Length: 446
Image (cartoon, rainbow, N blue to C red; front, side, top):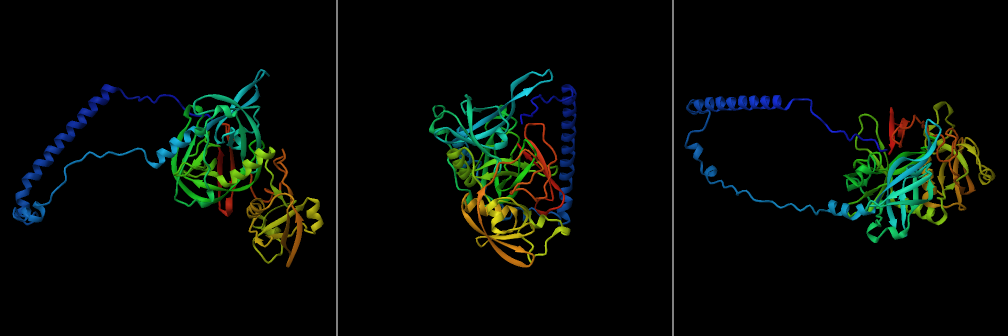
C-alpha cells in the first residue's frame, strides 16, 4: 500500500531539434500531397476514356445529385448520467482507513508509525464502518479519514479472518445522513451489470478514486488468507469484476448503477498476463457478518468439529474406495459431538440434511448460510461402499491459530500454499492449480 511514483515525466529530447524535425516532416508531407494530387488530375481523362471512371453524364446521376446532407449541429451531452449520480451519492460514504503499528527502527527505538492505508464505507448512522480484516490486522491504532478530510480515531469493534471483514466505529457526531451508504442485494446480481469501485489506491493522495467496469461473475471461489501468518484459512464465494482494484482499494465499496453497495473490495489476481480480475465480498454476506460483530464483537461460524478437505484434492494414491468422486474427506475428528456421532477418519461427507456437498467450499456455504452454532444436522457420508448417516451438534469455528501449518476445518486438504508477502503493506499469495486448473495464480490483497 502507498506505493506510487509522483516524479514528473521529462523528455530527453531537445525542443528546438524536435521542432525542426516537425517542420521538415510537414514540408515532406505537403510536397508529397501536391505531387500526388497533380498526378491524379492528369490521369483522370485517360481513365475516363478507358471506362475506368464514369463519364460526366454518369457522374451527374440524379440519385447522387439530389443527395442532401444535414448541416453540422451542436450536440449537448449531459454528464449527469447514472454512473456520475452513483459516484456523487456514495463518495461521501467512503473513508480512508489508516493502520498504525508500533515499529522498532534500526536503533531499537519503538514508535507509532503508519503501516498501511486501505478503504472503508460507513453503513450505519451510529458510526459503524465496514472494511477488510487485512486492512486493520495487527494495528495498534486505527485512524479514519472522512470525506471532508477530517481525521478521527476509530475503535475496532471486531474482525472475522474467515471472511476478511472488520467493523470499526467512530463517533456518530462526526457523520451525517449523507455519509451513510445504502446496501443493495448481491443475490440478484447478473454478469454484465455495471460495477463501480471507489477507494484510496496508493494511499490518501489518491483518495476517492473511481473505477468502472462490470460484474464479470457472481460466484467465484477464491482463497481467504491470514496476512500475519500467510495461512490460507479457507475459500470464499465472491463477486468478480473488471473494475480496477489496486492496493489501497481494499475495504472500499463496489457499487451498482443505483449507487447501492453490492460488495466490499478485497483482492485481485496480480499474476503476469492477467488484468481486470478483481474480487469483492458479496454484500449479503457482509450484512450477516457485520451484524454479528456489532452484536457480539465477533462473528460466529458453525462448525462440524471435523477437519478435512475436498475429495478432489486428495492425492490419487490416498483416494478412499468410495462410489463417488465428490464430497469432503474427513482427515480428523475433533469435537465431542462429532466423535459421539460415530463419524471416522476416511469417511467422505456427501450431504448435510439432504443437501448435496460437492466439496469443502460447498460444505462451508451450506453450514454458514443455513445454520448457527448449537443446531443439529444429519451428516450423510460414505465409508468405503457403505452409506451412513450421523447426527452432529454444530459447534463454533475457532479463531485461526498462529501456526501457518495447522489445518482448520475450513482450510485443510485444500492443496494451497503460501509464497510470500508484498512490500506495499498488502499480501500476495500463490495458489497452485486453483479450482483444478494448471499452473498457478498470484493474488494480491491490497
